Amino acid sequence: MLISMPRAEATTSFTYTVTSTGDMNDTNLKDGACTGTCTLRTAIEQANANCSVDPTVSTTIKFDIPGSGVQTITPVDVTNAGDQSHLAPLPGISCPVVIDGWSQGGDGYRGPPLVELNGSVAAQHFGASGLGFGGNDNGSTVDGLVINRWKGSGIEATGRGGSTSVAAFTFIGNYIGTDPTGTIAEPNTDDGITIGTIGRATIGGTSAADRNLLSGNGKRGVFFQGPNTGGASVVQGNFIGTDATGTSAIPNGMSGVELQGNAGSTIGGTAAGAGNLISGNGDQGIAIGGQNVGSMTIQGNRIGTAADGTSALGNTHSGIELVDKATKDRIGGTSAAAANTIAFNGRAGVTIGNGNGHRIVGNSIHDNGGLAIDITSCGTDACGGVSTNDSGDGDFGPNGWQNFPVITSVKNADGQTTVTGTLDSTPNKKFTIDLYASAQCDDSGYGEGQRYLGATTVTTSGAKSFSFTVAKVSQQQISATATDGAGDTSEMSACVKSPK
Ligand SMILES: [Ca+2]
Ligand SMILES: [Ca+2]
Ligand SMILES: [Ca+2]
Image (cartoon, rainbow, N blue to C red; front, side):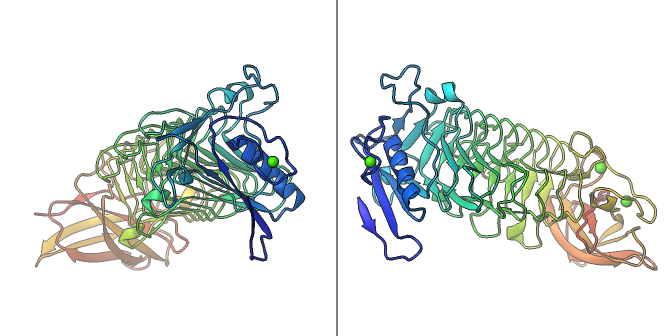
């Protein structure tokens, strides 16, 4: 079907409707049609042919495969296919394409995926990813697909193909690494989604329909592969490492989200529905490291809990790990919507292994195996423990080895709790003191940081003391961090229990 588009930037777009789970080739790439039986392979081949003539051409691939329930497309392997023209798994996509899996459910359908792309045959021979994007494919979108059992990643958008312009992708409403029910792991060997080279992506969204389930994969749920210079990306509203209900783990083998590039990206956000559920994974919840990272914003996520935000579903290592060139990351914020819940993870809540200016404020961090916030000397979360204060805070290291406050008293009177303390740090500077209340102290005697109480300031001249008053907090462990003007947040102070 040829549709003339009035928009100036896209002179032409094509729409093909896949009507078969078969795997035949397009027999005439010059006719602008999904020739013969329209399969996903036919449609991709013709889409690639379309923009090889005119790079502004885009193609939409819809589905109307007969039958009810989930329809499974299993690309075949040349070694056992009757049709010897099948020389590869699905061809790499080199034109702007919208693959609209939701269309299988009819107009307006936005429910669980009804089209499954199964790599168990073809990928075993070729080591391929399910859908591969490279070259001139800016603006490509994939929605409403189950993608599983590929030897590479479920979706790989690496910018291969010689393109020099950034390509932006949108991936919403997919199940990648599980079966169509979202309850059983059917792993892709590498990542759920790999974004590389000069790609950037919007993965998920704030509506439940836009949520991707990215679980059960051999490596990460989402991997922004270094050194990616594609720019700021957004990962919102997804379930990463859990089942479709967010109640049990379907771990990705490594981290839930790993960023080795795409500086300035946002994981979660403050809008309703923007937070991701990142739990149950085999390494960290979120790992930030590599060369082109920095200024990441991590807000509104549940990291290590079930979807209810309270039940335990920890990631194996830290909730969040900041290493290598990570710098100026912002974790949480002073508004309730910005807070991450980071709990039940095997190591620290947040590990600061390298870099400066990592501002960590307002989150609910509790019941992790290690400290709530741990600045480490080994560069990763493989080591940890309380890093003691040095007099005058002249030491250098991750977050400047920012000294933490010392709480000297917690008193209740007239329905209010007053916390006083001191900070020994760089002389004659102003620091923000953020205070927290927790049901229990960490085993170390430092932290936790379960409920944010608010902030005050301290100036490191004269008495170097601070005082903070809040509505009465009865029999809670009070702790605090110090953050300098550059955003270097300390580990948590020792806890002091408030009176009854
Ligand atoms: Ca054709
Ligand atoms: Ca430490
Ligand atoms: Ca220090």
